Image (cartoon, rainbow, N blue to C red; front, side):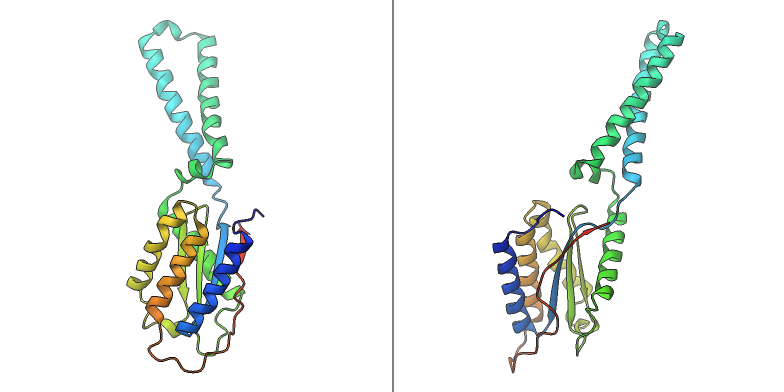
Length: 216
């Protein structure tokens, strides 16, 4: 799995997690996922687009030059159409930015949310004394951010508040500044959940180590 954060970035983020937890009483987990699904349909969508465009061009040529319609010309046309489809599909396997063109936003959000919910359960982030766990997950391929708070935060972390934090993070994530995006997210959580009175610091019930997974 490729390295997303430098050691310096990781250490700084883990320090910021501890500071945010002290200020809010929350138990915050950061997660970086390379991609939340394989999206097998993406190469086929690209192939279909390539075939459609090539077919249109072949039709135009055939319409303008009727002499083009010979057995050999037909075989050449079929080959051109297939090659165009393959040429459009192959880059989606290696170029994430090109592949995202064929990924519907609602599909991406659904897959990333499902991955986040599964991770929340698998890592038992619900196992805190006052149900104060929070998962802040970024999925790199999809450029999606999911904020999953446990029910102890229901009052302060409503949909509007979470959307605001995510919107603040998104520009940094889209530009490839993953560490910066997570810093912004932590700052947003700290601002939203800051305790009015600070008593004795709560015990750290969940590890501050940043989760990084390859995903699907």
